[in-house]
Image (cartoon, rainbow, N blue to C red; front, side, top):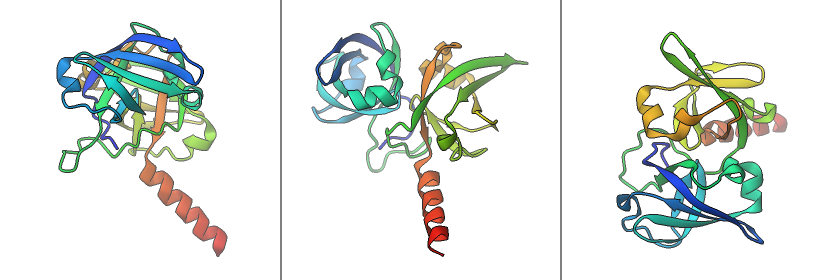
Length: 200
């Protein structure tokens, strides 16, 4: 589990195709890999991946084909920036919201700037947009954000300078595909409510 507070922006060092998907290497600061064990969970652009190895400045991951189909990791190339977060430990401060690292979908995005505000608009498939609520939480590329607008086929969040400086969201362009994870508590509650109604 994660909190949606990005701890570092890493850089893809290599991305090699394998029979099972993709093998990637991510360059990071030495402090990020401190006490990182093989098998530990790390959020990479909001995707929960298992570290298969690491050294002082590099982490190694295997990404399976199903993950590549659902997330934007299918587009990463050497030099690309990725949001990173180590898994939550009991007793840690939760500055964002509980994030599972199980990406719901990916959506085409664009940055809109007006009167000093930075709006990030993201297209979202209807089956997932139903679970996006105004002023609710959503994780975008692993970053915990608040939903500010909701339209027929999209929703928007507003980005403060701190978020732009601490994540890769400042690099969004009109062709960017971003990972979306809906708030699991909302999804679970809504599913339970629908099940109760169906049983009445």
